[in-house]
Image (cartoon, rainbow, N blue to C red; front, side, top):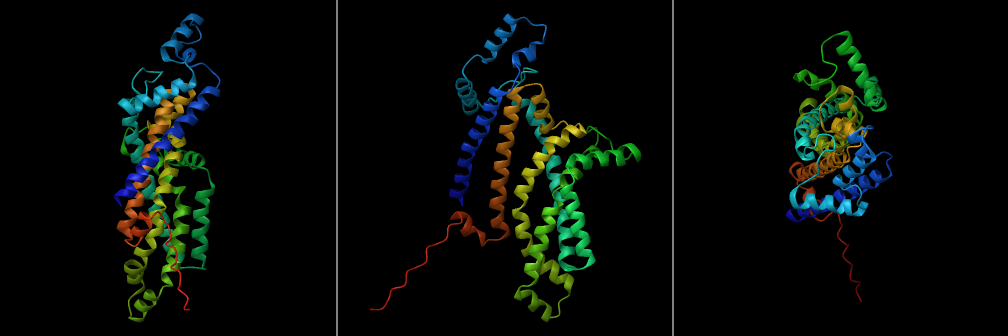
Length: 324
């Protein structure tokens, strides 16, 4: 297991290098001059060139890239914001905690609603309840998150005055962002739970439990549900990544001071160190989360330990020795 964890951590290196290289390449083809953006249109050409020299923008792109990567490796330096002059890392860390609370809250909401609907759909298969669950789950998957956000703002903030439309002045400000991100993953959890429950409910030990006279509720909770949750747990890592990606847009809609809004604002300002630093930190967080999720599979189902350690490789079948 330790060897597997070390291997996954080493995989982080090419991932981060790839992300940073892509953003650096996009930076070179993006129109606009960061130095002019910082100084304003009133600055002279001499001032702009001096600012470019100060920021190292006159150096070749390869030199800029290697200097940036070297700063991260040697001192954890993600650069300074063009806008404020503050270290990017010090600006992202408090916003990262805000985004993390929204992301994990959204995953909990999506998993809770999706698993509940999946169980109902499996227990009531081929009935009107099963069809209704399918329609509800597909509705949340089909409608874009920002449309759901606008509808929720219209209902709960404008008409009912129950929740704030923007900002995080109180805990109530977290509710609508969590709902928007969480509801988009309901269909995935519902589909996986329904399929897994139907498969488990057809196993021999379930029929044995019914033959012993156990109630359906006891069979569902104590026998079927635990085994059916293994595929659901495996999808958590993917949904965390989707939640983080969706949060970048919704944080802007709801005015949430998180990493997503920070990156979006930095893009509009051509604040490249902030964009690059935010993208790299998110990539690191996603890789660590996926590693934790993979390791947690062993705690849920110890039978997966051999598969994880061996990397999913199957043993070659032994050759039979023919008798002479």
